[in-house]
Each structure stands twice: as structure tokens, then as C-alpha cells.
Image (cartoon, rainbow, N blue to C red; front, side, top):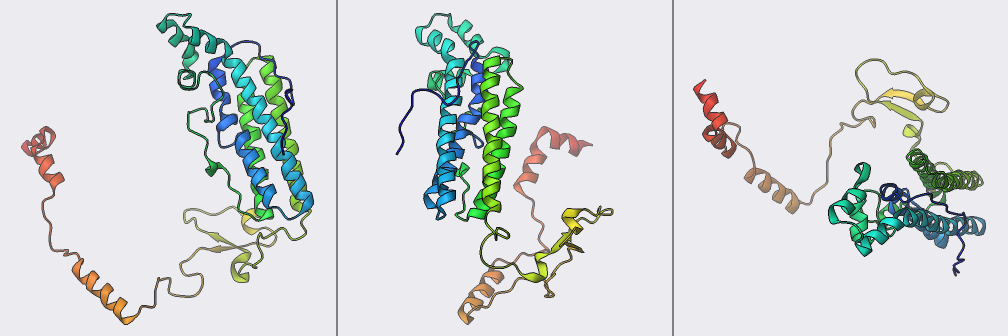
Length: 297
């Protein structure tokens, strides 16, 4: 059950209208690394979680992400508020309004016209939010690792957005949101390492013959030895074909009727390497100015 508190988790103070910045901030409203994607990821994981402690953590962070969605949406709305009123009341000549909404090369006219300056569920390029951003797999060890990475990506996006603004109030609120990504990452890491058997994910053990092998697939020049290819628990080997000792081919057992059908199909569709017909592309090239010029030479 959710109840809405009319006060934001963090106070939003926007110094001046800036539709272009508002458009960029939509990345964290309806984008793949944004707050709605995070809230839905953790909320759906929480519903399916069997461990009561992790369930509480996921619900708490999902709910906080919804509050962050409200914060970033409020910043977008405040940055758009002046242009929203001017556009709605047609206070400017058309060309002047268009110039305002395209100031400094931004494309905020799209969100202004389509959504009236409100925080649309799109990314900064206008791509609609999609549930495909939620990549949960239903295994806590895999999902927690994905959550850690998601928080790291969101932190980087907030850093980049802070660097785009000189508005002290906007930078302050974005700094809070960026910092909470770090805190959530800590919680997810601690939850992951509180699971005694957290690697490899799942229950089935890996095939021992290949579990500790790093296959060197590069052929030009030497490969620098490093912990990720030849450190503790890893052995570097050349990635030769058929590392399993087989012949490296793909085979299937077919019923006699299937075998007959495949043989008939292969015979009917076999290529004749002695035939070299003139193609439509060649005929077209011969009749084009470029082709005619080549023919004269």
C-alpha cells in the first residue's frame, strides 16, 4: 500500500526556466537508467523475493526510487514551467517561441508540443519508456549484481547531467539523487555477499573442464598476462576449434523420412558453380551515366 506525502524527499529549487536542460533530464525520468526503470526493477524483484530481509530492502529502495522519480519529474516541470505558460497562452510570436524552445541547439520543442512541458515518460531523445529496461531474471545473486551495475550506470548519468547545468539548485538536487545511487549500491553489495553461496549464480555447477579457463581468441601479437586471463583460478589457453576434443562440426540424428526430405531439398536447391548470369544490378549499371562512362574508357 502506498500513500503520497505532498512534500518531496528532497527540496527542489530551480533558479530559472531552461527547457533544453529539462529535456536532457528526462533521461533519468523515462530512460533506461532512470528512476522509473529502477523502481520497477526492484519492486518486481521484491514481490518474488523469498528472503524477508532482502524483500524489505527491495521494497524500501523501490519506494525511494519512486520518490526520486517525483524529484526529477518536479525539476523537469519547474525548468519547463515558464515556457509551458508562454506556449499555452501564445504570448510570443510563433517564430520567437520556436527560437526559445530551440535555444542553444536543444530540441525541447518536441516535449513542449507533444506533452505541454510535463515530464514525459521518455528518454531525452523522445524514446518511450519500456518494460524491456527491467532485466530481472528471478535469481537473487544474478539480480543483485544487475542492480549494482544499474546503480553505477545511473550515478554516471547524474554526474554528466550535473556537469551540464550551472543552476545551483538543480545541481544540488541532482547531487542528492546521484549520492543515493551510491548508497543503494552499497546495500545491494552487502545483500549479495550476505548470501554464502553467491557464485556462480544458479544451482547447477559449471563444467569443471572449462570453468577456470580463459580462451585466448586474439591471434595478432602477444596477450598481456593479467588477473582476468591468468590470475588465481584461471588458466589461459588458445581458443582452438573443438576444445571438447570432437571434430567441431554440427550433427543431428534424423529419422529416415526426415533424412530423405533434407536430401531432396538440398538437391533441388543446389547451386551450379558453372553458371554466371548477368544480374539486374549489372544491367542497371551498364545503362547508367556512370556505367556508360566506364564503358567508353
